Image (cartoon, rainbow over all chains, first blue to last red; front, side, top):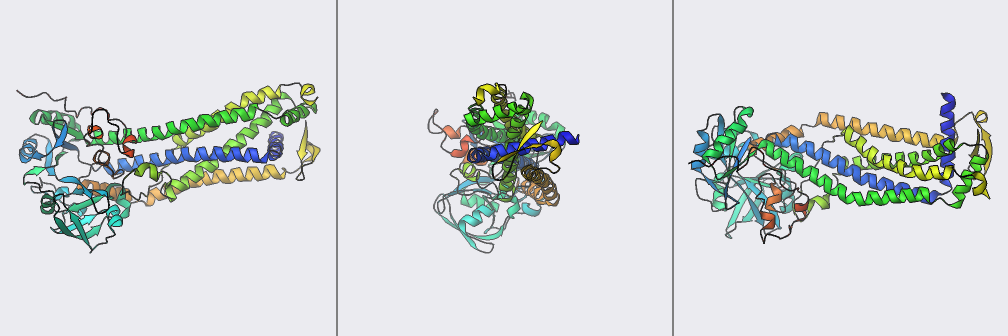
Length: 391
Length: 128
């Protein structure tokens, strides 16, 4: 055992000495390899953490959201719909939701204006708690993105021009904590009176409806019943929401990985080329090794150590840098991709989450092909007759 | 088996297993570096576990979502249909004409809609 270990150590030493003779080429390869792994690991870690964050946040989403559709587009729903849903057995509470988008011409940002669910009359039996208590008319609570972009703090005035050009002067009551920015960055929470006045919305209409269901196993039945009562509505369950996000993250990861696919393939070709296009010097080295008594198996093992060392160091460097990038620097390099044209972007502080299976997959999908791509050329070089190469 | 052992000056001497009592410098450095790297990977696992333990933020966020009745993440605020993908009007990206390409960069980051499953408009039968 000790002997075996020492043989391996000496082989590593020999490999390193051999690699040091082609320092620039091997360092270049290591850098490119580590860079590819850094991007792949960043995407994997970021998406994994975001997915978990989404699930943890959205378990609080309404059990069923009811959206009226007119000509295939989202339309306002009135109080009759609300009453009809309340009459369905098994519905714990039903309430109208008031929310909408607002494009702020002052900074070119889109806000989401919302009235807390407990703050809409009739409240439908839901108690207003913590964030749920609506602000007094004339006051707003805003998300961190809005506060940053408009440069306002609690106690300041927020001036907004409504779509008709009327100026609204609202006092900032609070800014939502930065830990919640993933869901609150662009929120402007205001009272029902202000919301209706701002958007010139008549009484008795809502953006959509939310339902609470006493027994989660009844959701399907209740949705079926509700679809009979309100045939022009679309029903979105919490499960649909979570599924949407699952699909979204899968897709986004897929897109990035597909883009990276080309880079990975190019890298594989490079690795193959490097291993197969051996310089006369390298071939002579192999010839000498064989001439002084190395067997083909030993030559292959020594060269495999080379691939393994490059892969391992590249993986460790790529993964560790990606971890720092995603969890200590808020994935700053991925930000332009995600932000698009948006003015507001949440400062996301992700809670680290390492999925062992995904990291292992990443390891096997990068290190495996690299070692495999170099194996055949190494074998072909190792079986040559020493006499031929040295001559 | 005879190893050509490289020296720092680049020359090589012939060494054998029995004549090298200590691991050569280069190999030792590489192995120490590898071990340090693996330890750092282990460190990330511990860091993740530690920070998850102290993080109350997840629960606070979930509570805010429940209290305000939110349905989506504020990841993409650039367009209506990217701000609330789960509630979005899925025709919006193509509002200019049926073959119009999606304007917004994040539109390409949001996947095509999945079937709505049980909660579909077409599931319920229209009453008499």
